[in-house]
Length: 169
Image 1 (cartoon, rainbow, N blue to C red):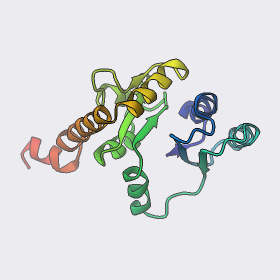
Image 2: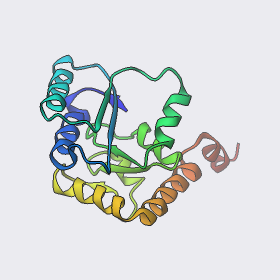
Image 3: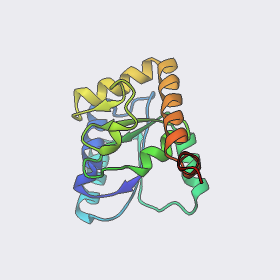
Image 4: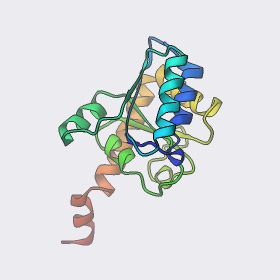
């Protein structure tokens, strides 16, 4: 859930997914990205098509309302945050606050906040991210535990209500 540009690393996520999970019955990648870089969008679509990848959903339509976004997060087990150019990362906070585990690029600022003993932080796309995803796919109880921990971190520290309570308003 982002915009299409090189810094967001959506293209690398797609190439990674095709390499490790092409047409797997166990995992599906859903990408919602508004158009920003038309050439990169074409490259991503061509890569998915050339690989005949049936388990990547590439959606460029904007969500009509917050309920649609809520439903995507709630129906997902893992949210991957590949971006390297954002210091904060609202999408990772949104996903985590709804109980969807966020696996985050170590080069983004949000990785310092939603880090669960480095189990959910990756520093390169190939083996490191694959290991993180496979770890959680094969350790569902740990995935639930870590997603609950992230949810707690966000709800206790990064909601308007928690901030208001901390400053005493």
